[in-house]
Every structure is written in C-alpha cells, then in structure tokens.
Image 1 (spheres, rainbow, N blue to C red):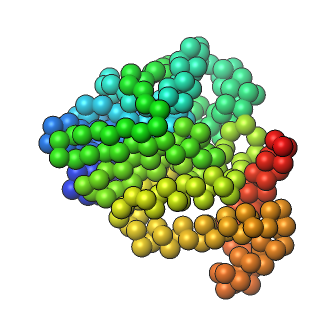
Image 2: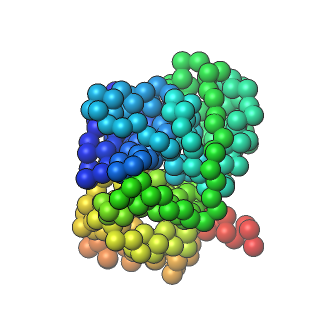
Image 3: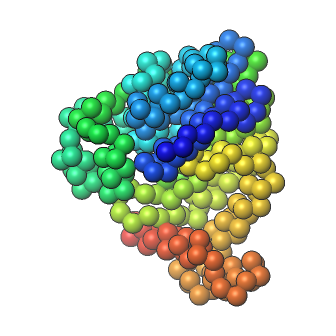
Length: 290
C-alpha cells in the first residue's frame, strides 16, 4: 500500500484513504492551542502510519479525536492514540456493544449474521489484522447528542449529527477557518443489514444540510478532497437522480428516461444503474415498514 499525506489547507493535514483494506482518510486540524484528530483509523497499524508522519514533520500530536460514525474502519484504530474520544451518542452506544466482545473469526461471523457488519467488512478486517483476537474497541469519553463546537485556538470545528442511510450516527465536521467540510461516509448507501440501499428523503436532506455550510473543500472519507465547483458539479447529478426517484417512486423506466434526458446521454451510466438498485431497495424497505 502506498500511503500519501497532504496538507490540504492552512490548518489541516490528511492521510489519504487506501482501499485494499478499507482505510479511510484521517485528518488533523491544528489550532494555536490544541490539535484535533478526525477519525482514528481502521487499526492501530493504520493509525501508526499517521503518527509516524506527524512526528517526522514536527507536527503536534492530537489532543483529542472526534469520530464521524461508529463503523470499524473509522474507530478500531483508537487504541493507538490514547487520547480523549469525542463521539455522538449513537456512536458511543454501538462502540460500547462492540467493546464487550471477545474477538475471533467466529465473532465476525456472528456479527455478519446479525447484520452489524457485512461479508466485505469481515474480509477487510481479516486482511487488516493478522490476528483478530487483538482487536480492542474503545468507548468514547465525551458524548454529545446533536452538535458540538470545538475551539482549538483560533480554529473552530463544528460537529453535527446528520444521520442518513449509511449510518444513523453520521456526523459532519466543519472547520470554519479553512472552509472545509468532512462528511465521513454520510453520503454513502446503507451497507449493513441486507442489500445496500438509499432513500431519496435521507439523501436529499444530507445535501440540504451540506449547503448550509460555507465550505470550499469537501472531504468524503473514502474519496479525495474536492474543491467546491467540482464537488457540486458531481453532486448535482446525484441530487437530480434522487429527485427523480422521489417523484416517480418505483417507476424505473420513467426515472431512467428523465435521467438520460437530464444528462443528455442515450443510456444510463453504470453508476446510476447501480444507484437505481440501491434506491429501489430503499423504496421496498419503506413500503415494508408501512
């Protein structure tokens, strides 16, 4: 794996995502008084790469870490940091449940059976950890419900619960002075508990909230930091697709016709063929819940 590091703004340095074992972006935000880590990594081994780089660069070590959501790839690196952990109450509750487990391959199978993780996560965990019995889950120290403001000294970070399909505890982290919005995996589909799905209402609500920040840089945990013009150009397409789904429900032919017309193409691009499956699964689930 080739690890890349980048200073993306005046106060923010990141370690880029790596996809072989589902390692998300990790970031540090440096203020005059304190330094905040955003997400902990998917293992102590993953975290150690960032720690080594920060030390090499003479960058202050983080004083605390904030989590974007509970999923393993963002939280299992916590034991390496040994600093106070800030998390939303739903994140804390999920990690508390996982912290009580004795980890083994059988444990992973049981979590799969319960829909808490999926087979891909199980495979990635097994690849990331030579011995899964070494997994240790940390329970957060500081818990908030809706939102939190963290003052690092001349740099303010706003942490806000936004939810969504991917994880009910998903949070945005906005670094005001750098106009940078960390979105975690909030814009992704639900990945646990059955087939992947999106619901148009949840997806569109995330975009509405996103626009209320004055962000110029957008960071999704498994992507690359993207400037506003490019990010909005891409997200407009997804927003339009979700609006067509909201309008036409399970009428896939009408959605396809509207979207190809909007994009001015003859056939639906592959990314939206897949998205169609996700949104239709979301609609099925909504109907079943009635």
